[in-house]
Image 1 (tube, rainbow, N blue to C red):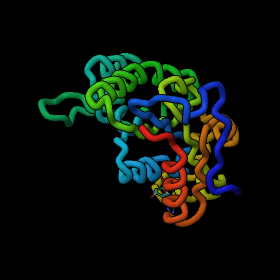
Image 2 (cartoon, helix red, strand yellow):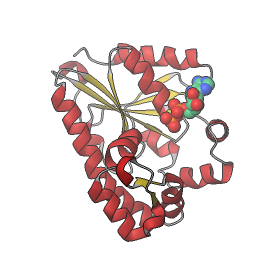
Image 3 (spheres, rainbow, N blue to C red):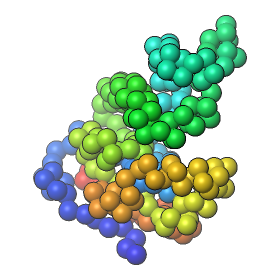
Image 4 (cartoon, rainbow, N blue to C red):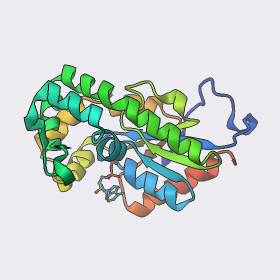
Length: 220
Ligand code: ADP
């Protein structure tokens, strides 16, 4: 396997010819493959990091309009009222069970939450216009979000490694397999990405690839 595979920059122009006042990297790949680990490594190298799943959890699923939509669709059981002042808080395992068992529900939830994620990205980019960004985007290609980013990066590993990491994180194998099956096949993400990081080895093997990636990127 190649350590760092530079893919052709389809239709985006050669990076050396581009004048970038900022840079936005979209980091995708299979769940458990190492997106967050790569984003943190980029953070240590001066990038600002945005974790889209965290934005959903902490900024979107707490919005009153989003909570009201969830309760209207799934009933009171999808929230618990343990928040300060009795505000509802989403019971994420209950929600996950609903949406991963039914594709239509998953798409509905994505449509409900994604506008809030895009708004959070916009606000972050606008607040620090000169920053370089490492944005974790699990569904980057599934949702056609390439246009948001200067370069896309796929963090990949073999399925057995992916399942083992998810199991270690407490996600049972059957549920992990179910979630993986809802994403675009990893091989397709590899094909679509500008850069691929192969995360099957030690953390330092991955760090070395991140260094090669940052060396290959055009200067801001
Ligand atoms: P993702 O964000 O793609 O779901 P994470 O970056 O959270 O994946 O990685 C999944 C798990 O695997 C985490 O617990 C992480 O610490 C661990 N991990 C990632 N890369 C490595 C590696 N090269 N060696 C050992 N553990 C790793």
